[in-house]
Length: 108
Image (cartoon, rainbow, N blue to C red; front, side, top):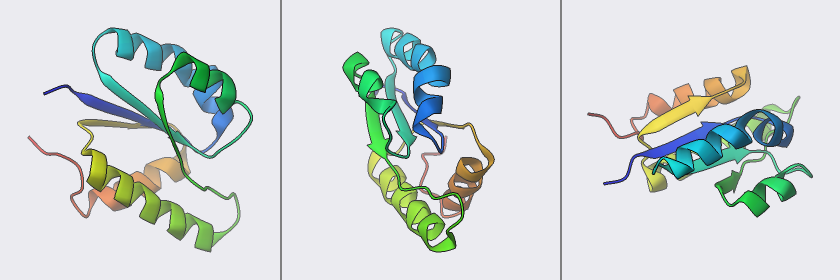
């Protein structure tokens, strides 16, 4: 079974400028790689490189949107069963840890 890796961040700019080279290197090494962020203009150039992307609706100041994002992350992680989850901002880390408490990630 292929190791599934996901990088989660809150903004699209992080995927393009911070994570793209890491995603491509992991992909070339044989990992099944995904990235999760809010939708934005920087994702267009990332899509051309072909790592798997998932759109999550983050909002900087809206608790209801955060709840929706947490639910979306929960559904995504239930469906995909990632082996490795890497978060990059505090909000993404908080949302993933709250999902981890519900045991949606594969455990060894």
